[in-house]
Amino acid sequence: VPMVAPGNVQVHVINSTLAKVHWDTVPLKTVRGHLQGYKVYYWKVQSLSRRSKRHVEKKILTFRGNKTFGMLPGLEPYSSYKLNVRVVNGKGEGPASPDKVFKTPEGVPSSPSFLKITNPTLDSLTLEWGSPTHPNGVLTSYILKFQP
Image (cartoon, rainbow, N blue to C red; front, side, top):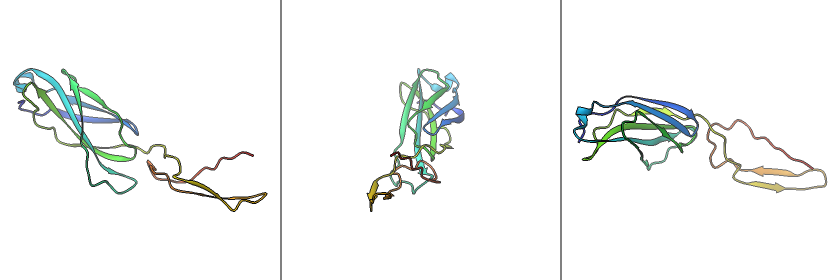
């Protein structure tokens, strides 16, 4: 299997759900075989707006050939992530680079979990709503739009 991990791993967060990861290629003699590509392991450490899940699901993206970067789509807004990169040959994976921590910014919240109309009269009514299932950040206000 390969002997060394990719170095100089850098993460550039593009938006609340997408990041780009860069790494330096490993010297070909340390691959000890045919270079097949690089694997990026990444996982959410915690949501920054609520308690973290106990089960951590690691995701793996494979980038074929002698690539030095890759895109990580489908990230959750307002969360903390870790990742590492490994080189792959025909026999297996090399050691992991040191874990890199990155955070995604706030995203647009989902809609309120419910909306209920109570006490309707001729000229007024009362509205009740629930917090969004996915706040994707710190909620600061609600905007009510209506029309006759």
